[in-house]
Every structure is written in C-alpha cells, then in structure tokens.
Image (tube, rainbow, N blue to C red; front, side, top):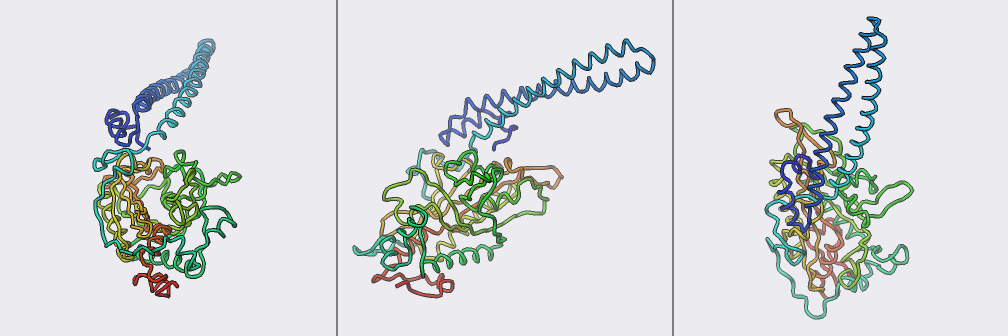
Length: 423
C-alpha cells in the first residue's frame, strides 16, 4: 500500500508512475488527497471539541465550589452540545477513514525507474541468456507423453482423485520431486537463508498483508467455514511472520526460505499451453524472502537474481532472465525479474521463477518497520523470489534430458535422487 504522505505530497508523480503499469490512477488519487485533507480537518475540529469539553468540565467544578449553580448548569449545557458535536465528528471521521482505506488498497505499487513501459509479455526485456538449447531431434516427446511412458506422473489419476491440474507423482517421479525440494532448500540455507516450515493456510490479515487480498481472491482457494486461504505461494505466510514487527537497526538482513505446496485456481486457464505440468492448481515451490533496509534492497535484489541463476545453472537448463514491463508486473511489485527455461520438446519458454522487490508497499500493509540509527521508525523493504517452482523445472528436465526413451538426471541432482536415469 502506498503511503498517505507520498500521495499527499506528490499526487502527480504517483499518477505518472502508475501509468507505466497501465493503471489510470487520477480519479482515485485526487479523491484520496481530498479525503485526507478532510480527515485532518475533522481531526483538528474534534481535538478542539474535546479540549473544550475538558476545559469546561474544569470550569463546572470551580463554579460549583463557589456556589454558582445556575452558571454551572449553563456550562453543562455547553458541554452537552460539545459532546453531541464530538459524536457527529467521530462518525464523519470514521466514514471518511473507511472510504480512504477502501481507495488506498485499490492503488498498485509504483514501478521503479528501471521498469520498461509496455502492455504485456511481448514487451518484457530479455537481460540475459544462458546454457545451450539441446537439439533433440524429431522423435522427442513432450513431458506429458514421456511421463506417461515412464509411468512417473499420472495426470488421469489426479483427475480421478481431485480434478484437472492435480497430478499424482509416482516412483521416480515422486523421488525427483523430493530431490529437487531438498536440493533447493540446501542451496538456500547454505547461502544464509533460515529454513522455516509455515502453515499452508493463512488468515485474511495475512492475505492482505502481502497484497493477495483484495486483489487476487478469485485465484485463491478459500475455506469458507474458517475464512482461511490456501497459500498461493510461501511468500504469504513467511513474509507475514514479520507483520506488526518493529526490527532493530542491527537485525538486518532478514533471510528466510521455505518449501510449501502452492494452490492457485488459475480460473480461465485452458488450451495447449496448460497441458501436463505447464500450469497446475497444486504445485510444489521453494521460496526465498528477504527483509532489508531501503538503502540495501536493490543490492539484495541483485544477490537474489544471481542466487536463482546459480540454481538453474546447476541443473544445466537453458534459461533467460527477463525484466518485466509495467503491463506484465504484479499489483504489489516495484520491479520483477522472471526466469524462464526452454522446454525443448515443446519449443517454448516456461517461467520457473519471479524475483521481485516490493520496496515499502507490502511493509506498509504489514506495519513492518525498523528503528534506524537515529531511533526513528521507518518502513522496511520486502523482497521474494522462487527458488524454484518445480512443475516447469521438471517439465524441462524431462524433455531436455531425454535420450533413447530414458531421462538422464543432471549430475548435481544425483546425490538427491539416488539414481542417474529414469527408465
């Protein structure tokens, strides 16, 4: 959530920057500025009213001591009038604040200056590419056919048990999943990230804190009876560990990693681009989260990008890193870099990670602050990234490493799988 101070002092800047996200913010921003002005005026009048009541209450006591009852009764009427006025002002102030808050959450985060303009994925900027794309020949199978042939992933059984988008991993397929999770967690913890195992259901306050609510409620699975949400990413519970926390100046950096299953409804998803593991309703993902001082957050972002790149390189997958344009960014992000791997049998790029800096946007919702060296309370910056999301990693591993109907396991992964080949 953007701060009122920014909106009050620089409304034109906010409107101009949000246009990079193709968001027309003019009407909302100016309404917020008006409401904030009214809020402060109402508060000043209410404070004056309350001070008047206190002053006159003291006056009544003095008059009563002097035996001037008639004058005291007249002052009591004035106090009653002030109390009535105070109640009216409080009601107006509450109504004003409610409208103000309801508008504030409609504004996305401001993109930083490095974010290119653009309307969609076609306008994203490729900033780096790595590893060669394998030439598999005409007989290469897409991962859904390869998985069926090797009997390691059963998509039909998932439909039987739950529905489309909920595959069942079997045998070496299940072991491959577990191996990747363990490998990613080991790499993250070796880099100084504290491993946590959070709940996979969160309350509404947690969803609001990281910006999934009220923006993405249609994409989240909701347990209506308890008003809990299944997590769409470990980012939500892990970042919310620090909701309503004030950190010390020396508590940084905060670095955490977690594995969770993730749940996304992906409403309206259909067609060949969602076949197999390309898009699921339940999938495994390892996440990294950082909390930083504002002056260090972009250096931390660079470190996170290099960290994720290192994992992809260990797997030997052809990849590219994209800086997302304004029109393809999330509601909450100030800047996002996507990692995509090449799926050789499908002949297409698949996203496996997003690494983002949210600056103070999430922290303002979370009330996540710290005391600086001068003892002044400031909003922290939050960052997160996938390291990595498994389904499309598995898809690319199966397709790119197939040979003579078998799948060769990358060398770095073999200590975790316990086998070299899937056959």
